[in-house]
Amino acid sequence: MADLVRTGLSLERELLEKFDETIARRGYQNRSEAIRDLIREHLVSEEGDQNKVIAGTLTMVYDHHRPNLSARLTGIQHSAHTQVLAATHVHLDHHNCLEVVIMKGRCAELKQVADQILSLRGVKHGRFVITTTGKDLK
Amino acid sequence: MADLVRTGLSLERELLEKFDETIARRGYQNRSEAIRDLIREHLVSEEGDQNKVIAGTLTMVYDHHRPNLSARLTGIQHSAHTQVLAATHVHLDHHNCLEVVIMKGRCAELKQVADQILSLRGVKHGRFVITTTGKDLK
Amino acid sequence: MADLVRTGLSLERELLEKFDETIARRGYQNRSEAIRDLIREHLVSEEGDQNKVIAGTLTMVYDHHRPNLSARLTGIQHSAHTQVLAATHVHLDHHNCLEVVIMKGRCAELKQVADQILSLRGVKHGRFVITTTGKDLK
Amino acid sequence: MADLVRTGLSLERELLEKFDETIARRGYQNRSEAIRDLIREHLVSEEGDQNKVIAGTLTMVYDHHRPNLSARLTGIQHSAHTQVLAATHVHLDHHNCLEVVIMKGRCAELKQVADQILSLRGVKHGRFVITTTGKDLK
Image (cartoon, rainbow over all chains, first blue to last red; front, side, top):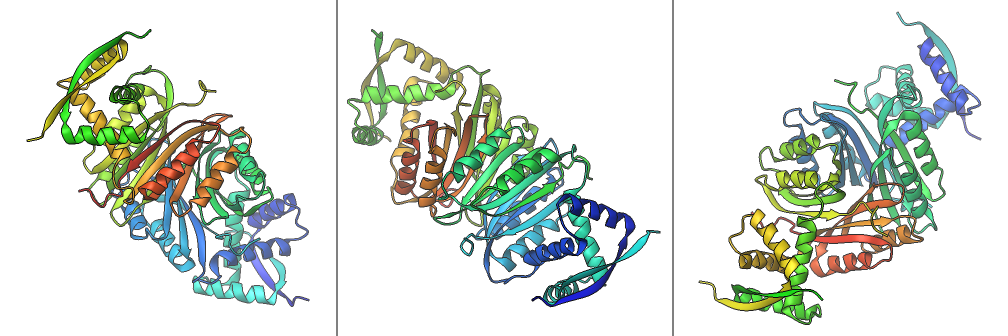
């Protein structure tokens, strides 16, 4: 049986109440179980073998009128052209773009590309999703 | 000042140790702060105005040899063709596909499309990322 | 029966010989038939109802190091964001990009967007393909 | 100086008149020049070294309700996954899809993949565009 330990956690009352609502809606038995799931999910993306070949997608929203941003994004992706498989760009409105970059390569390399892009000024929101190449899953 | 409450949490010793390692690496002062961030991030995707127009991407990996799966995925996306803007497909190997579906629409509608796809048998891994249309961000 | 007319054509001997080879390979009976097909195909893209709603794709190859080119391409596409559905970008090597822009709209509008992009300096090769929205075809 | 030869051409009067209109609009000096351009353009896609590495895109429109068509399209693309870099799919309406397949490889191989796809029943319209990888162009 798993070796359980107990720890304390302090947080804002409002945050806790909202969290309790969402976990009730999703059918969790208790709060510990829900937090354990958040931690596990977090570890999947943080930990793992940094040398393992994975696939990943980076979703970002930015304003293409920001000077040099388009050029920088393209530049970073080309420098990583062995990892970047394709990027699809949707023009949300006159200003805002959504772009998804699809990558495959060693975990550490993909994270580095994602971090370079997400730290550019003008990228309003971004999220890097690590997934599998499918080979190790049935 | 924020109204702080204290709660207990039980979890596997190994999980806690790994979590402590990653938060140390990322420079968190303490465990509560790191868990609060996970909860906040979770609420961003779970809560929020379900009627708000958002953009989102669904990343998934599947085996296209699974009978009827390609047809079902295409069918669901077409039924939601007012929300689905585009989908890009990369052929990882002979069996495995990575597909990213780009959507825009009311939050609740996009989640429903994502859930329909992620619950299909044969989808090995999937992740729905909610982002902004950029209009409310500077 | 169709009203046939006869016209003369002067061209480089080498060009004519190469053309004769390709039409023989494709099984054409004679040169006139092959040229008529080229003309018909050309008219399909040139003529046609300019107000008709069509779908089209623009394929282009360019060097992203060319100053301002990335920004101009994104700018033109955003100005036409009601016609441009999505663009997918593949990084061929450190310098060269292949980008496909998918559009839907009135024929004349799409041609204008395509012409604006193709006339940019730094676009090495480009081809606009007009296709159908599928509604008028069985 | 180029060695010019003269040949005759018979075609429908209506076709010739329409062709004359479009070439006048585009500013051609005479009919021969316009036909030579059509032939040259045709040769670019037909001839060329079949072993040369090129990039190409295949644009197609199809009805995804056609039984097995989605699965066959995905199957052909996966069998050619060393050539197929990415495919982007747009859902035009409840029935019709537009899909663009981006490929890189030897000319003869890409043509074969394109022909396999275009000959599938249910593909309403398709067009294969050969372009350059950019390496041989300035």
